[in-house]
Amino acid sequence: MKILCAILIAFSTFLTTFIDPQIKGSYRVEYDQQFHNNIDFTSISFSDSTYEKTFKNGNKTQGKIIRSYIENKKEHRIRLVDNHFDISRTGLDSLIKKSFGVPIVEFLENKSDTINFRSTYVWNLHITLNEGKLIRQNK
Image (cartoon, rainbow, N blue to C red; front, top):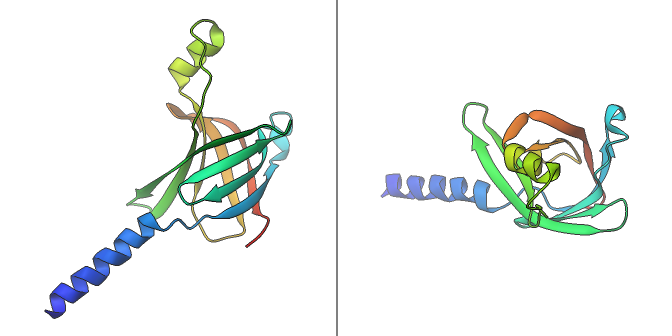
């Protein structure tokens, strides 16, 4: 019986780490100096398994939070994928999105008020579009 209780406690702790997101609230975005001409979004708000990005021009987009656990590093990696991408059927932009994949934001989940992130392509993770910090605005 004691073994069964220990297994149930361990299993519920394991599930909680994946179901209960660590990141919530609003964050201001600061881009690294080398990317100051390549600014994408200016703020982001996290809620459960979704987020909302606000752009420089005031437009907003929503997306989903994809979590993965890297066993050998004991880290939770977060990837943010926008819900809507306007992929045209012709032109260079369409070819780039088809070969590189859609742009995503990725970072390691932690409880810090400042989180380092980078933007990349879902199918070409070796390419960095920009980097910066997400700075918590409220708790």
